Length: 184
Image (cartoon, rainbow, N blue to C red; front, side, top):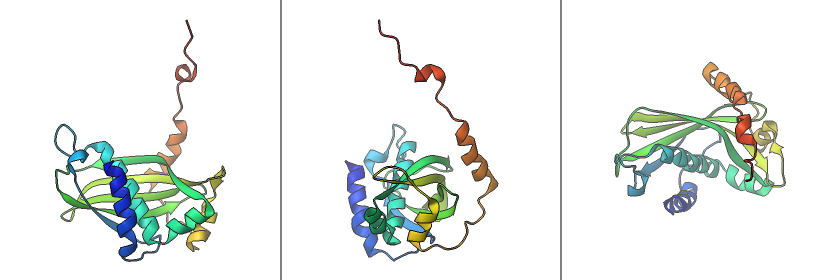
């Protein structure tokens, strides 16, 4: 329920914040709530990824992409993500998530998202996303860029991100897991 409340708050407050271009850095404020905590009383690692979703919604709303995507029947999906944790976030801590598009290829958009508390980076996430059509199929990145009014080429992605993205193709479901269990 808290995530629906946070989504509602994001959708309510984002239009009141400064307008951004989709390639601008978007800073979204948050606070650690009691149900964000794990048994060690710091924000649970899974919650970081959920907060990243909300910060990307903030970028889409503030850049004006949200209504355009909805009109097109397009929606984003995360296809790969990673997180590096530096410090813990604890109950009631205020922090920000700085979100920025760092590049793209034919199918994906790569987004860097930093958790920042009191000017210090707490965690850093990188997300690979692509856009799908409600009627089925994927949205070519060129169509997405055209909708956003982006005419420039992608900045060069760091080599580790290129390798990370390419390595994901090697992930496969083991054949034993694909087989249906035998019925007795």
